Length: 243
Image (tube, helix red, strand yellow):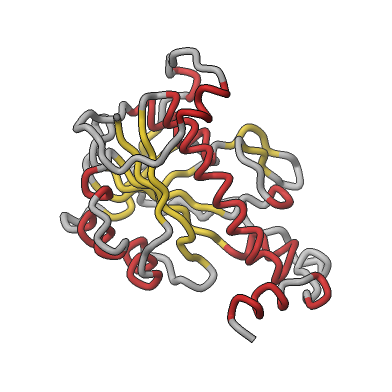
């Protein structure tokens, strides 16, 4: 049996172990904690961005992957909007469960958003993380060589160097596995596609192009992002920049 065959066989409902939810294990936290010493940067409200009117059909038909960008920057208002559209929280229930602009299996929303800022408003170039609960960002790794480290981990894809920003979505597997046990491995990957598609469509609405990235050295990229690659791992990435 190949690894692919085994993956789909072992994640069938017939083979799933009892979920943590059914065992009465408390629901996992909604997001990773913001470090106490983090220098958080509040983001403009998403509604502060004035965008030209575009109908859904136009946005969807214009969508295509773009790897070559101009040197124009993304404003902080635009970037706040992109973070909101991809992972922003619209409401929270008492359970607690978050409702966002993207679908997610069981509303588990397993992702943490990291991003490399090259040309984003007044942000210093470097790697940041987004807090969806607070709608703020904070520096995560501001080393001079972080751009090259991330580019190397992504098989030398040069559009990471030249983009205005690159998104990295890290899955906290426990959030989805809590409800779905082994089947979470399927759902997390599906959820990643929903998030990236929202970035593509939102990018079109502000005259940006996006290129999704799935070719990367897992160990190198997880290390560059500071996650262990086991219970927290990068599953998708995407560059964005002005046309």
